[in-house]
Length: 169
Image 1 (cartoon, one colour):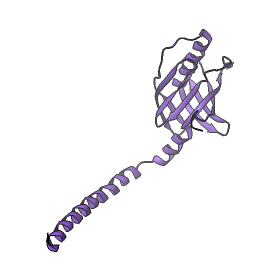
Image 2 (image 1 turned 135 degrees about the vertical axis):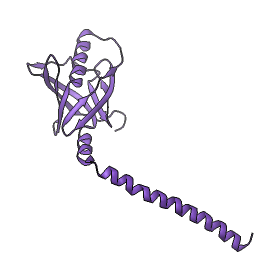
Image 3 (image 1 turned 180 degrees about the vertical axis):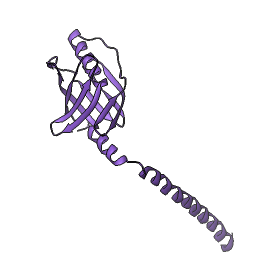
Image 4 (image 1 turned 90 degrees about the vertical axis):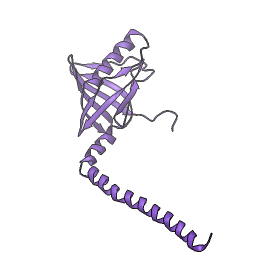
């Protein structure tokens, strides 16, 4: 192979690579422009505020606080990540979808495992999952997460404290 043919093969490869790169470069700003047109900043900030792993501290109904079933083992938890909520109701694991808009919170139908536990634990779990599905809005403060809910029977506040995910720290 002489220098001219080697130069031609390398030139073709470089030109092809350059053209592919240019095509990619011209489409990227269009996509970035399309995304930039949408007000994602506030939504991303609010979604990141609720994101994380939370442990339920109290359920306060409008009529009176609901005492938690001691010793809360396993704990009642909620993990919010990328539009998905998972957690423990005290007996069963649950999962579902959620949406936020400003401080508004909507949690869809929650699916759960079907283990049977003591009646007091099952009653508490039922109230907890029903309250989550009745979520109206939320606030994240230094003290933790508060979810304000309303169901057909009652309204109240779920108060959570932040928790580290076991096994990671």
